[in-house]
Length: 130
Image (cartoon, rainbow, N blue to C red; front, top):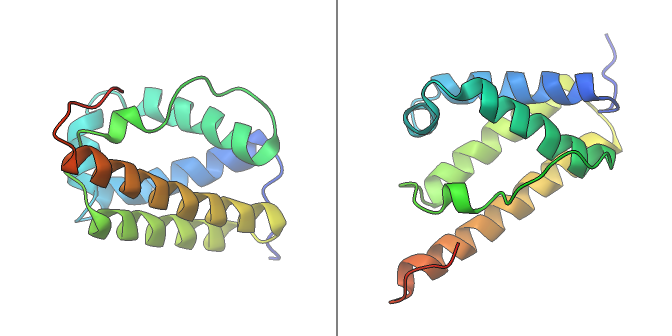
C-alpha cells in the first residue's frame, strides 16, 4: 500500500501514538519517559497531538512551552540521538511526502535546540529562569 503524507489530525494521532508506543518500550529512553509520565501518558499524548498539529498542519491548538519540562531530565546527546532515530523511523514507516519530511526536519531542529539550551543551563552558575 502506498504511503500518504501527514494531512489530518488523525494522521498526527497515528504518528504520536506509534512513536510514543515505541518510546515507552525503548531500553534507553523508555525508562526516563515512563518515570516522568507515569499515570499521565494520556495527558502527554493529547499535548503532543496539539503540538504537532500546530507545527505541521498550521492549526494552532498548542498552548505551552516545549522546553521547560525537559530541562531537569537526566538526558544527553545519546538520548536525543535515540529519540531522533525512533522518530524518523516512525515517520518513515507511516508517511511519505513534504509534511513528513518537515516533521523529521523539525524533530532534528528541536533536538539540537534542546541540547544547546541544556548545555547552557548545566554550564551556567545561575539557576535557570524557565
